Length: 418
Ligand SMILES: [Zn+2]
Image (cartoon, rainbow, N blue to C red; front, side, top):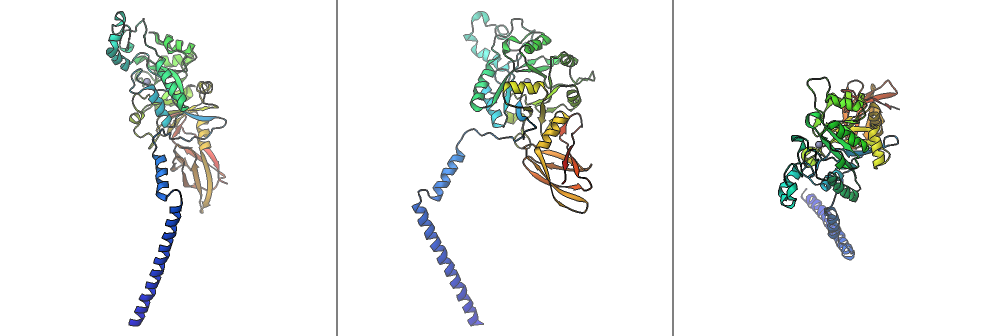
């Protein structure tokens, strides 16, 4: 026993020595190799790290597949800057939209309420001619809370767009000239694709809207509030304006607000649905979960190209889907088409009663799904999930329950099982 133990020890010792020698030899050869190479391993790593650490702009892409012959462009059609009551510059507004993966941003500063300019007026009044110096005269920064000033506002309403456009051109992001018509109880309205914001204002709301219309503007009703007195969910004159052809769309989501009671009116009444940030400060402050659980509000626009003509035409034709916190509002047809373009299914196995089906989502947007009448699951953006589907049919219907073409109405999309 004693001898045997020694022999065994010796045997292992030899093996260990052998391994030691092998690894030493390997190390010597590798060191020699790297010494001869122009870059050592750590220098290479440092060089790569340097590239990754380089500061610079980063755009987080939001992937949406083509729907039929149309590309899907991501737009925020309602934003503010320091040229009304926002806290950021027009250039920053553009940069942020680009970083967040949007393709289009509209700059829609208020005509009637310009908080920052009011402060700037106080700061700069010594530079202003004495006869124009009286506040509320030369610079009427708050028509909303005063009698409308027949002298108009002697500020240039195009400046914020001009500055944003400059930065947009540098980044390849489309900037739309717009303006917010702000009338308190009478409602607020955004006019997009205006030609000259300085010739739109009038104390009378309808005349102002008509002035924007004369410039060919696309106009929507902003953040509609519910009217308790009437059945209507918007001021009654909004529907009159729509009937007269003066309003094209409704903002079904604005910031954190989602106006579910308006879905039927919007989709049934032939309005274009839009969802926007109405950001005054930083987007990260407006949507604290943006980029994590969901994206910032956006209006998905189905158009052939990302240029003024195509986008304007698509908005007029109602080819939009409003997106708010992973929920979508649009026509039944467009919602079904977007879902169908985003999802593929494959049967990967079966049991006695069910098929095992892999559902793959080729877009960045998540979907909550219902099928077989009662089964439910989620498929996250750029992900797959495996679900059980009852046997017995060649096709099965998936319902994306986070898509709405009316209140509590979601489209149904059929997928082949074989
Ligand atoms: Zn606004």
